[in-house]
Image 1: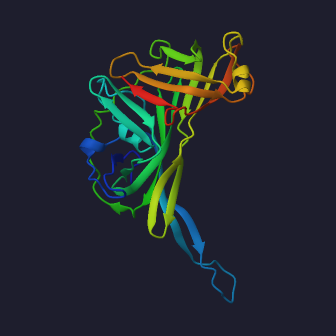
Image 2 (image 1 turned 90 degrees about the vertical axis):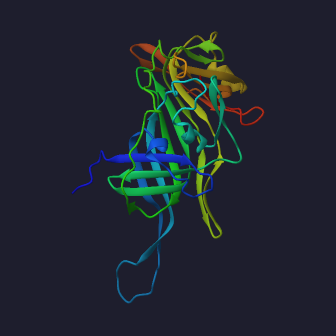
Image 3 (image 1 turned 135 degrees about the vertical axis):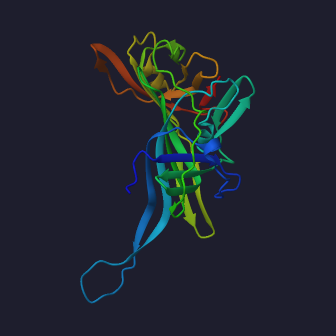
Length: 310
């Protein structure tokens, strides 16, 4: 029998001990994902370069083995303010702390030390790819008239694939998202100026490093380099001057609020963002638009961006 492409199951759970299976279950740890792709045996092939009296290939040995998995989840809250969303563990594995205020909010903000890791299990049919000690990065996109998406890229230590019965996933923790539009996305401001936005993205820009040495093998996050990219209708420089702000290296706050129902409101705030040099204009439907990029800078440290669900 063939393996049907649709027969995928993906689980993830925070590890309590690095690289050790914390006992994942389909009921508690399943992810509602799409566009899943896996590179199950990343690394290199080390040639043995043996002396031989004739032409021909050299045997090689696999080295530096690790796994990279990419997938999307929809951006929505848990449906209850003060209850962490089902994608919360994924943010934690990207080097973001999760602070839950019961009945009020869940806030994600970057950390520099004590970064958590995930144990992941991915089934293609009955073939299990376990991924241990995984850490990653993410990119949030919110495009007008589209579903807001988080694209995750996780890197973990290699475990030999095996055949095992797939977990039965429970996905009720993932809520239906709201389309990005005027009604559902009430706020997009830069430097306190409301702008007409076509698309938006926040790239966490994590530097993820498989560090495979004698005495230690781990996947580490060694830097956060968050960047916001967006396209908006151009306005007079007397209203918002990205050229002057870029030239003066003046920081400006960027705020996006998506969602209007309690438990499903996501606010992405970058209070100290710096414009990169604008590249020019583009036009859509005869309207001049700016494609702009901003670097999220820290002020006191680990405060360059926050993601709040209320």
